[in-house]
Length: 508
Image (cartoon, rainbow, N blue to C red; front, side, top):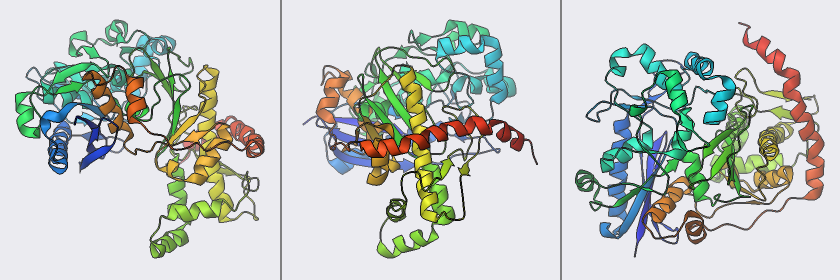
């Protein structure tokens, strides 16, 4: 038999999964590593931790499965996006990576916007300058650590660094590079204009590859350390959300997924580049060559429900422990006892500020309409509805850009709840499905590796073979109509509160 490896390089750990050619998981292994926070709002990781985790998990998966390494026909890596890896002339790491959730670079983002121009930056890179993105991190190191900057010869992203160490080949993959503010996204190439205006040498950035290109082959040294065969194909891979898109089959027009994890993401495929001139949602190159993705990111989706659970649901937590079940199951049962609209109660899920579609770090959560008659179950349902209204608002932005999915795939922890999935179907007014496999990003890059190895003619064909979907939940027309006036009111509340949020942020 023939097999493929998918490596998911995340923030909390790296997970490697071995798949057969039908997409069945044969074996997996995860290694966790620390997050370093030297100052409030900073976030760094050691690239050596990622590399060690990749090597160990590959070795463990081969051992667990008993598969002969010569039957592994390819591998690829899904990576946390935006992290900055700086290398010297010999390929040595110069400092810990400043990763995606680091917030130190607002001044540098303002500098980028001023140098390039706000509109021109979005025209070229398809996104505004954001603290999470890589360009601001580069400028921060240049400004604050000149002794390190003087030694920099190569700039990579997390997964591309690990691939380089496994293959000895320098390459950067386009979907991941889309989140740097340095790529000409419509033309899928480095932007010489942005680099010139920021005073960056293009020679620091390696050649670009597509996700399903052969980006290198396992070196003799890496073969000895992982148990893989020297020469095994390594594909370009993808940024984590783009890998998840492939792993859920969102690889052609009309396909989209919504992730309800700590944050919330609405992610849709487009065969042509679509850019929101207001920068409310992100446009990236897809892992599918020549295609694009449009995605939102709300900051407190599942986090809102977790906050409510931890603050108000100790009874459910205790009962779930006695019953050996998940407290969220009991919470869903309680929320279902409150009607649509939670007895005229609306929750704004801006607990950590908001990115899509508001771009307002001062926004904060709120219950609107709270009265003495409301119960915990009303508040619970309002939280769940508010999170889903926030996703609907982003879906409406996508629809305004003519990116209109015909059905939605539900992913993340929230997708485990049938109650929340039905709410999604009713509020979105479209069928909602889930994927049988829970290995989205790892499966996605395994599919890219299969295409690179010539096992499938293209990515959609591979997805048809390797991805299996559960039956759809259909929207209830009457429920959709009942939600609509509450959604319209929800959408009107932030503009009414925006000035108050700004004033509140200035108070001691």
